Image 1 (cartoon, rainbow, N blue to C red):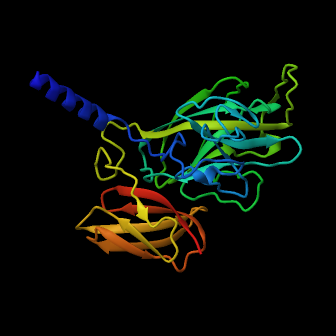
Image 2 (image 1 turned 120 degrees about the vertical axis):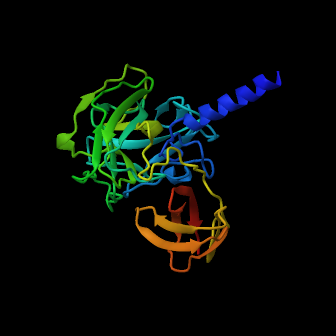
Image 3 (image 1 turned 90 degrees about the vertical axis):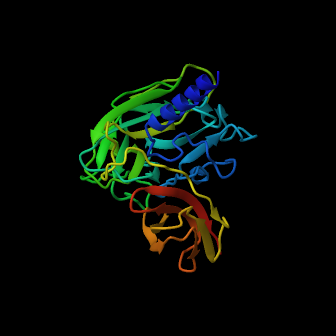
Length: 324
């Protein structure tokens, strides 16, 4: 009996280690800082932000008012594809060329020449009058940040993948793709990266139900995965797996100083602080310090992403709020 128990534990451990690593942090939006209660609160999902002046939404079953609830919310009714939460973006507006996008920094940059697998799920909201064929993903080295709500056009050097499929209001559609990385891509952005003239739309009439609909296209997004497909792994130094965890930094929110527990007592540790536009605001190296103190006096109030890495791998990523 003892032998079989040990064998099962070993088998489970091997299976867990062999599972592909998702380079998208919080891809199903389950880790949230607090319950969303109104539109435009995507940033409450750990790791996610808007790369433009658009205001993408976070939906959760924890919303007691059902305004941004799951399954019932103000623009439709849909259970999450995975878990209890999902995001939402405007992808087309028949009256104004308005777009919304969701974006995050990947847990590790992509490696040149390596093959990756991408999948994500989306669902058209009940109150949308249009479905589109152009919902897509851009994976880029830069954040593609925009100071407007107009369409973001993907950089020529970026990897752009579109669904090429249309779906009605009921249920989720999962799209999958494979690609070869150019190298150095570290941002993933989802939305419609086309002007209206280049967006393929299909009018989707709603059966007479008394529901008010809008001349727009709005999609829920959930369950985003980006994984290495190479048998030997996608690390350029030959490491097959990454011992990834999300570190806690404290205090959070922070005013003048932030402490980071690295769990490392030797070797060079690099700390990077990145703002919601993808701009690197701070980068410092430390030698064998298990607890690091960062001075935040030069940072403006707002949300930031903290990345902790050494010469081998990314060791942690965390979101924190700098306050006055």
